[in-house]
Length: 256
Ligand SMILES: [Zn+2]
Image (tube, rainbow, N blue to C red; front, side, top):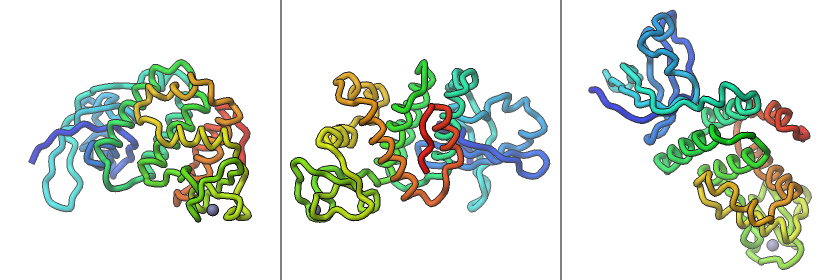
């Protein structure tokens, strides 16, 4: 049975002497396929199987329980700038690692479209900044169902007026009464920004909206980064190896 589907290349590894195992993100979730002979003969897949290339995959499923064979692929999009800019390359390595390691059920089409738009958007961006990292992490937390709760105290539901705490372990804002040891203090302004962020559109072109409103100082951005990164570290069951390099490249302090 031959079928075709759009797919974004996430990774590939050698299988035996001649074949490649290709991991792709598609509107149906992750698809792993065998590209026969792709190690030896490059003709059929000339540079097609590079990471983050968007392809139409033509797959053949032979038997139930075996991986489909990638018969042919047509190129839809290459993020060219990724291969010319070190900061972008490092950032994409981070995206690739997270996308490859994370998996979930539901919202596959929405997730695929978001990632596809995001890659195209990043390709056009002149410079990668902390903004991009924070935006990506917050959106991923949303897809994974881990968005921090910012409307009222996680434990008691009370809506604090002036004094806010935040706990990664509890998954959101805490009031003064419910605060625990690991919670850190947030200002009203920071909580307002968190609310904007948690309702933000998944369209990357809206990335700059909160900035236009002049509501996000670099200090607030650092807070957002701290929260999304701690959520990642707390909920993900693996270490993100490329994170340290991203932070060094973006000129950020590496917080342990
Ligand atoms: Zn409370």
